[in-house]
Length: 460
Image (cartoon, rainbow, N blue to C red; front, side):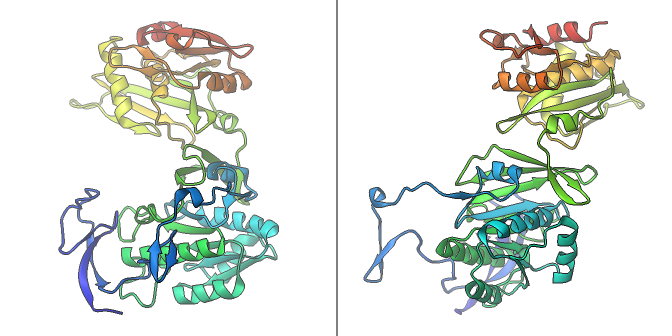
C-alpha cells in the first residue's frame, strides 16, 4: 500500500474532491460528502480490460476481429425475472439488485438461486447480514432448500475470493455489497471506496470465470451507506425492486441492461410462501374495484411491452380552511396531476380552486406516462360531480394545456387487454381512431378535447 491521503467522496454518486463541498458538482446533492482515506497507489480497479497485451503493453484490438457471438441465456426459473433480464441470465453478467431494506430482495434472489442450482449445478449465496440458520429458516418457508445451493456467511473479500476459487460455483449472490470490505483498504465497510473496489473485484472474477454474479444493494434515504447509484456504471444490469410495504405487490424494473431491454417490468405478489409471479396483473389490480363508484376510472397503462389495467381513484371535497387547497397524489406524477387540474379548471370550467383533491393509483402501482392524463381528468370530474364514469369503461389519452386530447402509443395492445377483462367501451383520442382495429365487443368513443370526454362520461 502507498501513502494514504484524505479525500472527500459524495455518497450519492461517488464524485471525489480534495476538500469538503456543501453541494456535489456532479449530482447536485447537498451535504453528501464524507471524508475517506484514499491510497496514492493504484488500486485493484486500475487495470486494463478488453485489450490484448504484447511486451507488457496494452494493444488495441480491431473491432472487426472481436467475436460477436450471441449471448446464451439461462432461464432463472421465474418468468417475470427472465422478462426483465431479457430472456434469462447471461454467463459472466454482473447484476445489481437495488431496493429499500425489507422490500424482498433477499427472498427474490434466494428463489432464483434455488432454481439455478437445479439447472446449472452448484451455486453460492454469500450473506454479510444473516447467519446460515436465518437463511435456512427462510429457505424452508420458501421451499428453496436445494442440494446444489451453498451458503457462506462472510464479509471479508479475501475470504470470499478464496471460497470462489476453491468451490467454483455456477452462479453467485452477494447480499449485500455494502457489507463486504477489502482488508487492504483503510476505508470503512459500506463507504464509497469499499463498495466500488469490492464490486470491481467481483466483476473481474465473474467475467474471467463466465459466472453470473448478483449484487444486492440497499437504498437508504439518510445516505449513510453508499447506494447502488455508485455502482451503476460498473455493473452490466441494474434492477430496482419496488413496492409499498403496506401492499403485497412488488415491481421489478430494469434501469440499465447491456444484454436486453430496459423498459420491461416484472410483477410479483408477496405471500407467506415467498414471491409468486403475477401472470395476469390487470385482473388482480381490479379484483376489489367497487361497482359504479364515483371517482373511479380504469386506465390501460403500458409497463414495458405489457399492457396493464389499473384503477385510478380521485376524491374531491371542499377545503376545510381558508387558503391553499390540499393536493395529495399517490402512485401518479404529482406535476402531471397539477397540470390536469389546471386544464379542468381553465378549459372545462370545473371549480377546483376551493376543493381538496386526493388521487390514488390502487395496488401500489406507479403510473408515470402521459397516457394516463385523460383517466385522471375523468376521475377528478366524476368525484366532483358525483357521477360514476361507468363500470365497463376505460379511458386513455394525453391531455394538452389547450385542453386537447393527444394520441398515445400502442393503443391496440391496451384495448385488447381491456376487452379480455370484459370492458365494452373505451374513451380514446380521436387522432388514434383512423385505422384502429378494435377488439371484438369493444366500442370506441373518440374525443378531441377534454370537454367532450366529460360530456360523454360524467355529464349531469
